[in-house]
Image (spheres, rainbow, N blue to C red):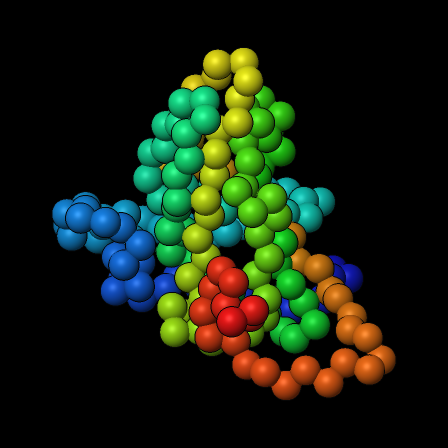
Length: 169
């Protein structure tokens, strides 16, 4: 028996939601990607991060950026957040960057109209001219669950609906 708190569950979003993340892609191609989505997993017993897998082949020249619909959502208990980072090796070799530096997935994002669909926007920030290639089904990003607290005088009661920037509208 392990000593870990079990606080979350990864799920696949609906096909309609996944498809909405692609502009003018052939539906059969998007459906084949959807059917092959892999839920995030830890690589080893000692890994903190859950690897997110590329739903399609990615090639980024230095300075190029791409938005990736992962097809994944996550249910987690309150008082937890999922923090997203590039896979360590890709960051080290290619200076792969998440465009928002660290992705923050709050527990209430799961209930948003977009089903809590996790997107990643990444940039190959290589200053050595290296072309980044990530094959479909290969880990490109990792997520780590972190417990958090709030201030004694916090009285927030507002409810989220949306992703990027939705809590400041």
